[in-house]
Amino acid sequence: MANKRILVTGATGAQGGALIPLLLEQGFAVRALTRNPDKPSARALYHRGVEVVAGDLDDSVSLQLACKDCYGVFAVQNFWEKGVGYDREIEQGKRLADAAAAAGVQHFLQTSVAGCEEAGNVLHFASKWEIEQHIESLSLPFTMLREVFFMENFFEPVMGNKGKKAINPALVLATLDGCLNKDVPFHMVTVEDIARVSAAIFAAPETWLGQKLDLASDVLTVADMKAIYRHVTGKRPLPIKIPLWALRLSNAEAARQYVWNNEVRWRFPLAPLQQQFPFLTSFESFLRQRLNTPA
Image (cartoon, rainbow, N blue to C red):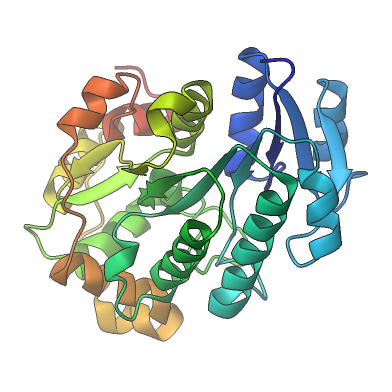
């Protein structure tokens, strides 16, 4: 794999940061895209043998240079980043795909959202669907990795958490309890599982090129989650529910997603994924890892 270079966007973020060590272990050369190559997290990548380049998803020239001589691209855009949102995320995704196509990239792995083709008024789903459609219009070999709710949201919520403040997982559970119907099977995934599956996809292009993969690590109702939370922590969940009307006051976009989860919902099964990727992390295992609680 040493002659195959992969450009990782979001290299100092959660998804890119989790993927890079796995690509290095598989023998890929890695080029990391970052706005600031001098920040400590970027310098740490350099000391691990990663080629670190300056670039920005809003700058076409930097993306063209970054994609040059790359076999693959790991493409991630963040709707929730301050100043991004719907229109700018679409522009960023299209800009990167155009640069990759022009450079002759042979495997473009786009992180997306499961169910985005049925986005309705959920903007962070609809933006991914627009990006997917643009990628498919190009002569660009692709895989779409379609993600769901991050388990990490229980500790460092992404959706609307612009200050990136840690939060009590019991509060997130109370939000889900108040916003999701009790019978809704709620799909969740871990960042580490996204990285491991992404590495597997790059290692087996003959299997994954042209494919769209809906990915979840676990599927549970809120009642299931509450029971697991109590089992792992020994604590009762909060005796409150945060209703949709209250969430709309602080985060209308997240509220729209939960309405979507109630009315449309993710419908793909977990069992085939567990068979294909036996390392997938259950919600209980995730909580135990984060809270350092032995089984």
